[in-house]
Image 1 (cartoon, rainbow, N blue to C red):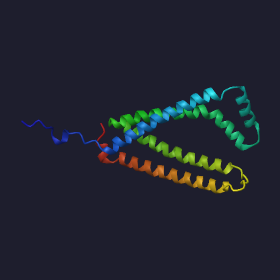
Image 2 (cartoon, rainbow, N blue to C red; image 1 turned 135 degrees about the vertical axis):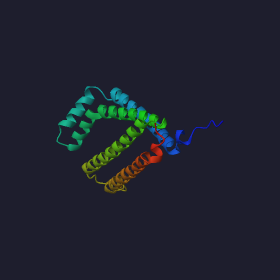
Image 3 (cartoon, one colour; image 1 turned 180 degrees about the horizontal axis):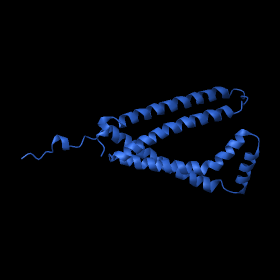
Image 4 (cartoon, rainbow, N blue to C red; image 1 turned 180 degrees about the vertical axis):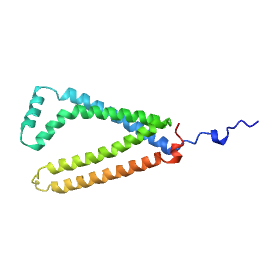
Length: 185
């Protein structure tokens, strides 16, 4: 008597690619949740108080765009870290579901990768804006020119953004391939 299941009833083999991606993102999203939680705790315990609030208010009231930008960042910081925590938690859930080969998790993970690429491009635009706002500081004797450093940072930002966009695009392409789709329930 043959006890093996027919070929049509056998589940496809689980690829190492999906397993590796899931474990990498489980690790990264767990660490990201921890960082967001620590930032929130530090921000709430170290910075509150009337002196800090006064300095931020004075910075926001000046005509200096850099000071106004910094003051607005302090206003938005709790929301940014809260959003970071939430996205990390959703990514953790999607990653665990990806590891378990749940199709909804694969689709959610793909959506999160697309969102991440959009977020990185927006972050690159913000980074370039901030670098353009930095004043030209006269170099001290023997110090490297600030302009060259900023240029290197701008180029590095573009290169890293493109590298992550290509990497995430490749992961998305693999996750929608028929071989990988066949692994999911």
